[in-house]
Length: 273
Image (cartoon, rainbow, N blue to C red; front, top):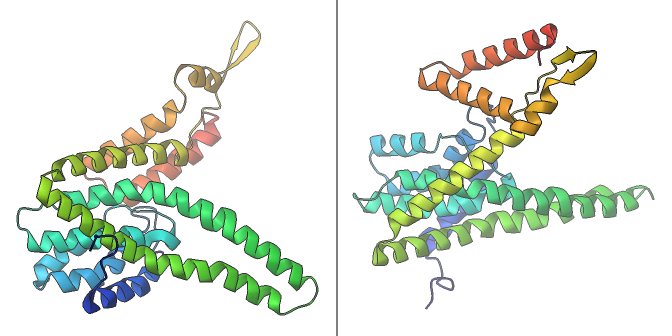
C-alpha cells in the first residue's frame, strides 16, 4: 500500500486528535519576541511526551520549538504534523540532525500563512459573512448561526485532516530520506527557504522612513525619495541588522523594544523619521 493511502494505527489516530485539540493554544500567548512559538510548543506536547520518555529530552524538544514561529492558525496542524514525524525520527535515530526540524518549520510557515490567509480570511470568511448578513438583515437568527457554521466547519475539517496529511507527508519524507541519503539536501533547502521567509517578513513588517527634507537652491529634496531610488527599504534593513547585532551581544528583547520606542518617538520629535 502506498504511503499516501496508508492508514494510521490506533495510537497515531489518538495522537492526531490530541494535536488537533492542543493546536487551539497556538495564539494563547502571542508576543512580539517569539510570536506563536509558545503555542506551537504546547501543540507539539502530545507528540513530545510520546516520543521522549526522559524529562531532559522532553525539555530539550519543547525548548527547540520555542524559536520564532508565525502562520495562519487554521492550517498550523499541517506543519505540526510534519514536525511530529520529524520528532519521531529524531527520538529513534541518534544520528538525526535536530536542526532540520526548525529549518523545515520555518520553511513551511510562510507559504502556509499565505495559503491560509487567502483561503480563510480572504475567501471563506467573506462568503460566510455575505450569506450570514443577508439573513440577519431580515431578522433571522439563522444569520449568525449560518455564518459560524460556514466558517468553522471547513476550518475544523482542514485543521484536523491537515495534521493527518502533514504527519503522513513527514513520515514519507523520512522514509525516502533514510533510503536515499538526501536528508542534508532537505535541510539545506529548508534553510534557504526559511531565510527567504525571514527576509520577506523583514521587508514587509519593519517600517522605517526618513522625513528629512533638504533645501538646495530653493528646491526641496526629500531624502526618502532618493533612498528609494538607490536602495528601496534600506533603512528597515539597516535597523533590522542593528537589532540583530544587539541580540548577538546579549541584549534582552525588552531592552531592544524600549530602544525602538525611544528611536521612534525621538526621531519623530526631531523630524528625522
